[in-house]
Image (cartoon, rainbow, N blue to C red; front, side):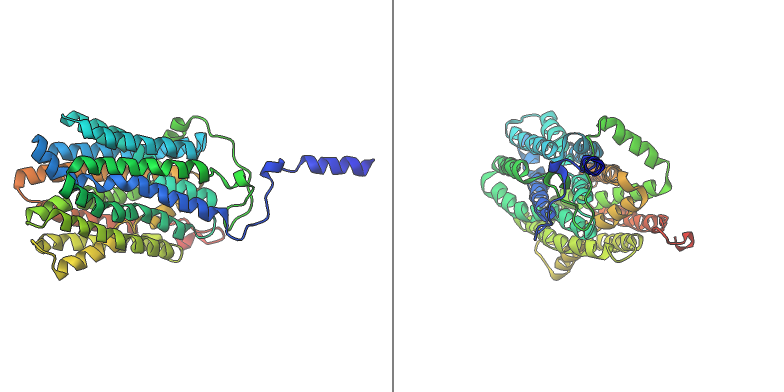
Length: 440
């Protein structure tokens, strides 16, 4: 009788049947989830290839200044960043699948609705508000959430791969959209990226899972853990994490450096490289193809950066990335020409390798500094990235209107990158468990 009672007590302590760990499959389900995340980010990133191609067509058709168009792009970029930490908290509350499916639909709605716009405020509504909120919900905080839940081993590598998805989207859609704009106008290109977002929704709904425990598995390289209860008060939690992180010095250093990262990539190169090259009589399709080549090497550089992050000090990696990027920007005005010459090819290859190589070490430092809240903290750091991008997307257009050239913007961005390198080096290190404090 006593043995029966003890056996029943042991059974009561077991997790419910659906949460019991299953035998480890030959190929872990985490890799399928990562693959779906990769495709989703590509679909969401389709729109990001468009604004730089449409500045001149919109200016020609509607007479809107480049500053007005740049303002719409800056609203999109700012919301992309500011939405990310709330999206990470919403994923904890409602699940990844629901949040991402709604986000993809918003991107499609904004891109397709822009076909009928006639006023600049509509551009800001469709491109700025709808697309900004949608893409922000699939920002790098989405990749951080998936990585934190599904992986213990290979986190740096997976972060690099998922970060490279944005560049892969650029690689796929930039040449296609440039050809469509050149042959058929900007409206079919906008519809194309809207449909690309909708196509991804079924993959997310059918194949994505919110947590390894949903399929009875442990995270890749880790021990089995039960799925936590939905976290209520998503907005309150996102703000609480921000207030807690804002009391620490590393947060401001990481956020400041990442703001400069956004200014020197999405805000400057992605938005203004094509019109700047066109100012020097380079055909739009050729300039867009150069951006696509950046996407090719971005994939390589980001994955390699993830591999390096698993092995070397993330602070020193960031310092090297920012310093080299700044040097490259200082030389860019001298490389602009009507045709593509070897020095420009070298710049494109180098800048591609460095484009978002900053993400894996930045996320690693957030994880090191802020633990379980790292995905949300990274969302706020990403918000600074997008605010920096938004400011330069707008000011770059204003500078072009005022000075008739982008040169001053390239030089200013190069100087800012030197500052980001110094900021990265002074982030204090958190010793690993069992490591003496003197090792910081």
